[in-house]
Length: 246
Image (cartoon, rainbow, N blue to C red; front, side):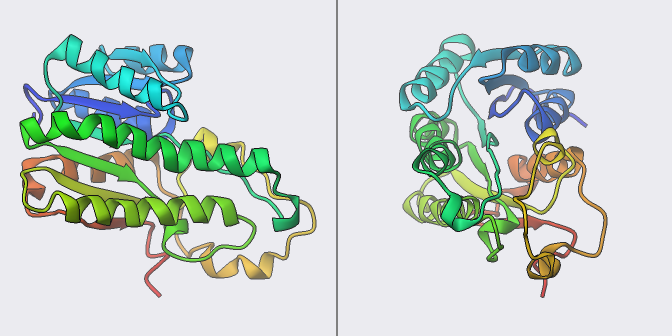
């Protein structure tokens, strides 16, 4: 099934994890994919796995990088139909140990980057009546101990998605978000908890089922990006194996 024939898709975080899986999935369904990431070797590997993909080095924490990357996509492909804000970072802290640098970096990548990319992409998505999809997190829907900066940024992405959806409700642009739970990616594999955490505080959001694979999130992304989801606008789709159900 090639739902994305003739469509141009740009994805941040395409060098690994969910971004890589999404690039492979959409390329396999006919999309012309442009992968954006700061990790150039990772982008090259994704491009090979996807059977060909344009690659653009982009630090989403920098507004100029975000805008330049989108303009490069337009210069190369002439249009933009789907944009995915997938890049993100995660780190666990005790609140007193969060430094100004820790906070600023989390906000820059997880929140500001989403906004700068959306700002750059939206004029082109309006022209094609396209789709903007932000990757949020279950951590943006429920409070989680030891991840206060991360939760703050992902909660902001959730409400940013809703606000964008309202601002563009009278246009053909669709704006949605996906809120994954735990996903087996390099980000999670390298995740470290601080010393002396109280794991009983975390039991409520550890879940009862297995973690997702990146391909699970890519499948949800493909649905939201497709015409099958033409009436889905302003939604936050939880893909967390029931973690936030109760």
